[in-house]
Image (tube, one colour):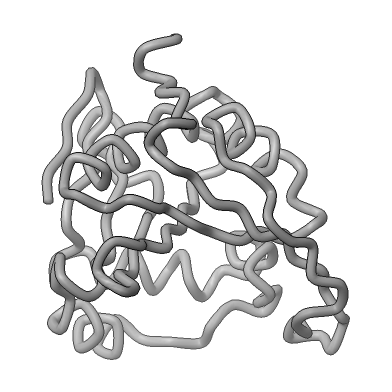
Length: 177
């Protein structure tokens, strides 16, 4: 997969990206919202093994670039062939809160609907109000709030919110600016 829009590019993660992914995933400040405030403690070699098995038919890890610089990552996991779960992290804090997230998500969502997926879903931490705002702007509908549904690395219970999006509800940020 390679999606380009203005200065943004979403592309398949490759072996050359493993060192960068390891740096992001081992950084507690990057991974805290995902429940890993101490980072994942993984290696580039382990990540390379994971992405070697990626496929558009099952799961895919993606790199987000802005003007040719990697700034974050995305992924999607295929369920029941017409449903897909997505995730996004803008890992470089210099590029957060600039409006890029909604455009980047729009790029991926548009591509997934074009590929024939009928439902896109995700979840986020209740505390991640920034992400919730973006998801709702794009047309995602809240389907559940799961109190104390998981425990982070520090043993703290966390609440998650489930969202889903159908093509008919999609508000493409590329079109609305």
